[in-house]
Image (cartoon, rainbow, N blue to C red):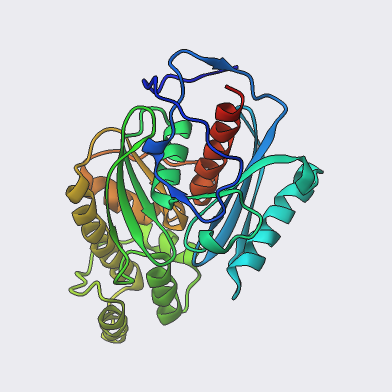
Length: 301
């Protein structure tokens, strides 16, 4: 049983298909204290990011399974592959899915989705569902970073983002890993073993690449260089967080959430311990699935 308590008495039925419409979380509402059983109706959320594509299958309050694959050249094909992988894990077919919501970078060209919702709203909803105390979300993805504020119901309140520069994104760390001849896992592990911290003056991907290369050639310990690099990333994203105002609790999502060295530097900078999802890359897809579930709930009123 699901209890809806969004605080609105002005519900309107939403048509079954909204192929190219984008909704923010505040557009969703249902009657106060209405009890709706959506058990047995499976919904899906698909998140097409610049680097990875994710799908989550949701049955009531249970996450059945998820998938996580690299985004290919065509977003529509990546969306289909992500959903197919999740369906295969759950031993289901697409005809058994009651509603599909797409989100992310490539959401508008997912041909099988009934609706699209912005990744901002989906990350707010997904993070709040995982951690009801979440009020601030830092999503660090492949090509952008987003600082998001939400209310107690997971509704988007405010956001700011960095989508003009690679600094603080997955692509930035991938570039630094290539420069140093390391894997992404090694970036984090070595940084945690640093004895000091070499200051990195530039967070521009191009200039930082040259700076890191020069420092290593000059004999600086790679561990100390990485510690400085992660501190520079933390300083960059802290400015984003200040733009929305940091409020307890802070949740970090996205692929960089798996880099514990970056997470620790952010925690030091913000002065808070961050909450980390078990799989930080699927939070947007989870939020999309929650929106899909809510559409089913509205249809049952």
